[in-house]
Structure formats: C-alpha cells, structure tokens
Amino acid sequence: MADPEPTDAVVLVADDDALVRSVLRMALASRGYAVVESCNVDETRRAAQSHVLHLAVLDVTMPGGTVLDAVSALRASHARLPVLILSGNLSPPEGLDDADCEFARKPIELDDFLERVDRLLALTYSSPRP
Amino acid sequence: MRSLTIRDALGGPWASHWLVWVSLYPPTTLLVLLRETVTPYPEWWWPLLSATVQHLMVGVVIALGAALSRRRHPVLPLAVAGAIWGIAAIVRGVIGGTVAGSVAGVDPEYVFRIVTWVVASALWVPVFVFTLAQFDRRRLLLGSLDAARRELDDARCRSVESADDVQRRLRESVHQTLQPVLDDLQGSLSNSRESVSRQRLEKLSAQLSRVHDEVAAVVEAAGSSAETPNSVERASVRRAFDVQPGRPVLTALLVAVATITLIAPDAWRVFGPLAAVEVVVATVLAGLFLGVGPAIALRTGHRVTVFPGQSVTVVSLVFALGAMTQIMLASEIDPITWHGLLIAPLIAVSLVLASVVFSLASALFSINEEAGEMLAQTRATIDCLTVERDEIRDRERRRLAILMHGPIQGRLAACVMALNFHMTAAPERHDRGPAQAILDSILTHLNDVSADLVALASLDERVATPE
Image (cartoon, rainbow over all chains, first blue to last red; front, side, top):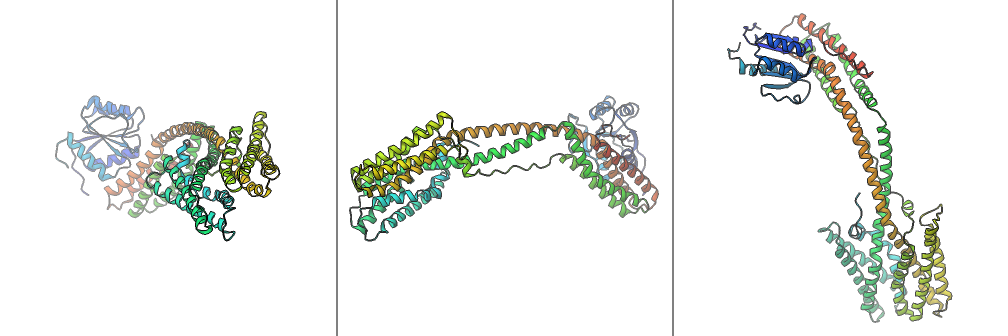
C-alpha cells in the first residue's frame, strides 16, 4: 500500500483510551490527515486553542467533564467545527443540540469511520482528497 | 376485578349453564310427579317420561336461545334472559299438557300449567342463577386473594432489599456471566501471540465483538429476572360455602314464599284445599326454624368449627325438615296421610334448595364486594411495592451501566476497533510486529477489564478507569 500524500487537514482525536487513540490515529494517518490527540476535557480545550482544527473525534466519556463540556470547549475557538462523537451507547448523549455534531457507536468499522471523517471534513476543508 | 352487576350475574354464562339445568331436574320432576298423581296414565312411568321430556326441551330452548342471543350480546340483557326463561316455562307447560291430554285423555289445562311454571321460574331461576354466579365469583375471588397475598409476601420480601443489595446482586450477576467469556477470550489471545495469522485475527475479532455485545446485553438485562406470576386457582367449594348467613329472617321468608308458591297450587288442584293448607302450615313452621336459628346465632355471634358460616343454617334446616314432616304426616289438617307422604319429599327438596340458594344469595353479594375491595387494596399495595423496587433496580442498573461503560465496555470496544482497523488497514501485511503490538495492547486491556470485573463484583467503587 502506497503511503498517502499528507494534507493540511488536522483532526483532533479526544479519547481517554490510549488504544482507541492509537488506532484512530493510524486510520487517520493512513488518509494523510494530521492528528492531534487529547485524553481529557482540559487537554481538548488546550488543543483547540493551540491548533487550527478541521474535525474533532470525541469520546463521549472523558475525565474532566461531560461531552457537552468538551464540545463547548471546542466551540470557544472553533464555532463551526464538525464533531464526530463516538459512544458505546445506542443513543446520542442527552442535551446535545448541535447541528455540527454527528454521533456514531463504538466499536465502529474502519470504513464507516473513514467515510464519516471524509464527509465531515468536506464541510470545512475543501482541498482535494489525497 | 370489577364487581358483578345484576346483569353480569343473570345474563352471564350461568344464565344458560348446564349445572343450573341439571340441578333443577330433581325438583321439577318431583313437581311433575305430584301434579300427575291423579292423572290416569296407562303406565306408572308416563309422568316420569313427561317430566324428562319437558326438562330436555327446556334445556334445548335455553341453550339455543342463549347461543343465538349471545351472537349479539355476550352478556344477555335482563329482558332477553327473562324471555328465554319465560319461553322455557311455557314450553314446559305445553309439553306437560299435551302429554297428559294425548296419553291420559284428560283436559290439558294449558293455562294452569303454563302460569304455574312461569311463576315458579320467575321466583326460582333468577335467584338460582344469581347465586351460582356469585358463588363462582366468590371461589375466583378467594383464589385471587390467596394469589395476591402470596404475591404481596414476595413483594414485601423483595422490598426489604436495599439499594446496595440490588447493586451487589447486579454486579455479581454481571461478573458471573462475563468472567468465563473473558477468561476464554484471554486464553485465545495468549495462544494467538505465538502464531499471528489473518484467520486467527478474524476469529479473535469476532470473539471480541461477541463479548462486547454480551456486556451491553448483560448490563441492559441485569436484575430483570422474570418473576413467576402466582397462578390463580378457584377456591374449594367447601371454603366458598363458609359464608355467614345474612338477613336470616328475610331469607326464611323468601324460602317459605318460594316453596309455597311452587307446591301449594298443585296440592290444592290434586288433593284439595286441606292439603294446600297443610303445605302452607308446614312450610311456615319450617320457615320459622330457618329464620330463628341463624338470627339467634348472628345476635350472639356464635360460630362453630366445622362449616362455621353455614353450620347454623344446616342445623336449622334439619329442625325445619323435622317440623315440616311432622306437620305433613301427623297434623291431620288433611286427614289423608298419604297425601302428606307424597307432598313432603317435594317440600323437603324445595326447602333445602331454597335455603342454600336464598341464604347464599343474600350473603354473597356483600361479601364478594368486600373481598373485591380487599383484592383491589392488596393489588394496589403490590403495585406500589413493585414500582418502588423497579425504581431502585433501574437506578442501580443505570449506576452499574455508568460504572461498566468506560472501564469495561469502552476497553472492549477499543479492542474490537483495534483488531478491525488493523485487519482492514493492512490486509496483506505478513509482518508480525504491528499485529503483535496490537495483540499485546488488547491483552493488557482485557487483563484490566478482568481486574475491573472482579473489583466491580466486590462492590469496589474505585473501579479502574482507562488512563
């Protein structure tokens, strides 16, 4: 498999499980996306403040706050950032009323994950796909 | 269980029940035998045959009428039930008169026969049907009450269980279900480390997915063990009979009126006015015994051990039958003794039937209403306890789900994703390095899951969370 060409798209992967972060990073890197990682809500806030992000992939349960806290931390610096929320639950988190947020259930298939990532990135990032 | 209205009782299944029909065969046959005593039939068995044919035709009329009417009204309107019974009485009179006229060559006396049967039916059948319906309801109510009390005891035992007990039980249940599956998975993973092949990885991935789904299912179903409902069986006849007689004087009056109405006209017609007077005197005296005994027992609050409710009625009935027989055979009101000898059995049957039916009818209605209210209260208490318990269980299940979410379900989901992503992203890679690293991570995760399951089962709130 040929290595993908790097793109300028930056994806934030926020999950408290290192294994999940690791596999998501590998999957995103395989498409040429740059990955920024965080493992709790505070780190997510800091990452959002210090990077220009094009997509965020959030775990629904992270230390330091709720998923709503994490989303509002992102919104402080990225008002229309698309967010893909991954959760073990069947239904989206209660109280999440954000048009730019999409919900998917964990465990997610790689193809499904990448299809969602590409679709969401197309909303904010218009450079040709690698 | 809603209360039984008059229409429910008289228009329900008992309106045309075979038991009513069978029960009324002996008294109606005795009445026909008395009525035909002086009819010059060629053979002695003709009155018996006439009575049997009358009863069979009555059965056909009632069964057919009820079946047809129930196509439109599952519970017969009172007018319809009354019409069916009325037609049956008319059919009985017509058949009796026709047989007497054609076989014995006498005046059929249709009017007399029809009127007496209609009056007898109007007096006896509704009370009979009402009593049987209420009696059946009492058996069902007693059975339901027993079942409800057992259920209440169970609910009280369960309500003693505290939230911590529920949480402990849920966790033990989750641990017992998942630990063997997890052990099996860990064993497979450890073996796979020696030879990593794509097939092996696929198998592991499928196994992991099953475990993950099973965790979700176990948490969802935790504590929702199926409760076996208590079966409702009708109480025994003996127990349902144990009813304190209500309004004994009124009951005795009704028994006497029903008996006199049934027998006196035929006694007059067959044996003359003195026989009718004798019937009236004997029945009134019997009625006095029937009314006085239970009334005294009610006033003094007397109860005996066997058949506590009806024993006084039974004792009074024995005295009433004795007094009635004495009058009919030895009073000399009607100087011909064999007249009394022929009529006495019919009065006896009538008194026994009427005593049972009328005394139960007056008592059962109010007693069943009380039992129905008691049943409703018991059910409400059970519902209340069940709601409280369900609330505790749901709360504890949510608590458990939160505890399970990150450390167990989250890690398992991570393992599944890691294997799937690895296989999908690098399908043709044969180098063991990356696969080995993923397997090591997964094994570490599963060890953590296992440790957390043990901690969870031991009610340790400090279940490790992913880093």
